[in-house]
Image 1 (tube, rainbow, N blue to C red):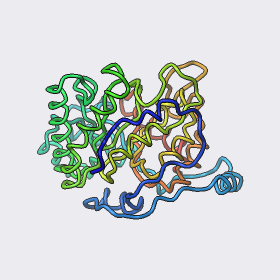
Image 2: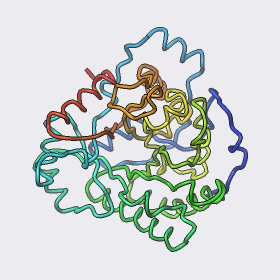
Image 3: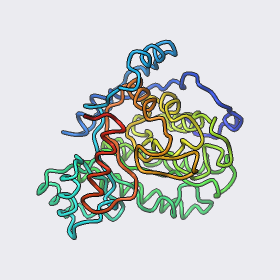
Length: 335
């Protein structure tokens, strides 16, 4: 693997609407989703192609606000959002009844036998996991022993994800409070890279989420920031088994969501969804607030996205779960 190191150039990147950095290896979106739904994920090698500005403009003019992602976006949610049912099987049934096709489980700590039993009883898919310790046990921690535990947790999550047929393990890479940007960059990349061989062996993608962790963006900055730091960070890992689980609401405060999607391109392997209001400076229900969902849909079509989208909002009872499912339908025009 290419030597991983900090690139100080990115610390002064301003607003940029240009073409994302090239990446040597990606997989076909249709192949990824099809195999993620029905069988093991297999890596493919193909050139990364981005739409030109002229193509994007023409597409937007022709499609307007009515770009549908039906047949492209598959609905999932976090297990913790299901506030109804006692057993795992009952929770899976509740999610399925609300219109979700998959569910994300927390790991480490995932009970493979119980989860597999619930999947068979409900015909639900566990499409991936969320690493439950990544905020407190961080890959960027100054203590090498803590980083070792973070790596152990990541590897266990990859193994448990594979055991239940999932294809992504969502990861927060660290926190800016753990040191200088260079220290957080180098520590986290070095630690995460050690899990890539296992991810490749198991066919599970390490899906890095863009979160409010004061790293790879300016937390005190304005709404004109770009995704280039995220692009460079992902490309340093240089593997088809590392991608982005792009959270649509998380960075609307700091930049254009549609443009971030265009810059990240096929590095995006999965989505998280929530709303955000710049005017009120707060997260909202999906579809509320002022996120430009029409541009989000256009951007996802432009990068030819096919995959899962996980709701990440306040959950609740069956009525609330149905509301969340319908909000996803409206946001992505799923029919």
